[in-house]
Length: 133
Image 1 (cartoon, rainbow, N blue to C red):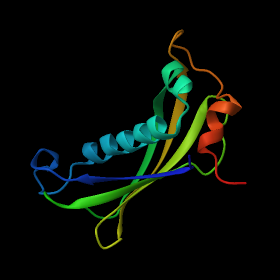
Image 2: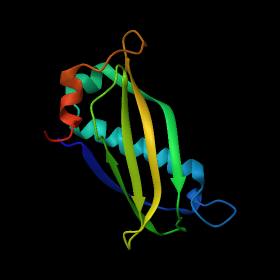
Image 3: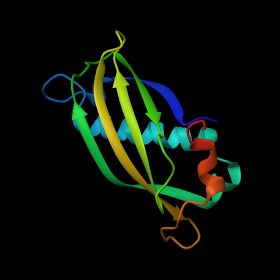
Image 4: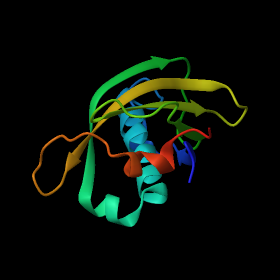
C-alpha cells in the first residue's frame, strides 16, 4: 500500500490524432486508468466492493507528447488526506528518457455504490493511500 502507484502505457495507432501524437482525450483516459488501477491494487477489497470514484475536475499541463509505439510511465500520487468526499491525485507521465510530458491534478469524489450518493471518505478507506507520516 502506498500513496504512489506506477504503470506504463504504450501508444498504439488508435491513440494517435491527426497531428501524429497521442490525443489529449487519451491522456485523460490513461489518468483514469492509472487511478483506478491504484484503487484496485491498494484499496481494501471490502471498500472496492462498496465504493466507486468519479472525477469532478482535471487540471492538465501538456509539456510534450509521444508517437505510436512509444512507452510512457504514469505515476499517480496522493499527497494529502481527503477533504469530505474528495481526494486529489497528482499524475505525471514521463517518456523513456525521464522527461515529464503531461502533469495533472485531478479531483475524485467517492460514491457509495448502494445509494449512488457522494459520501465523506472514511479514515479506514483513505488510510492505505496516505503519505507516510
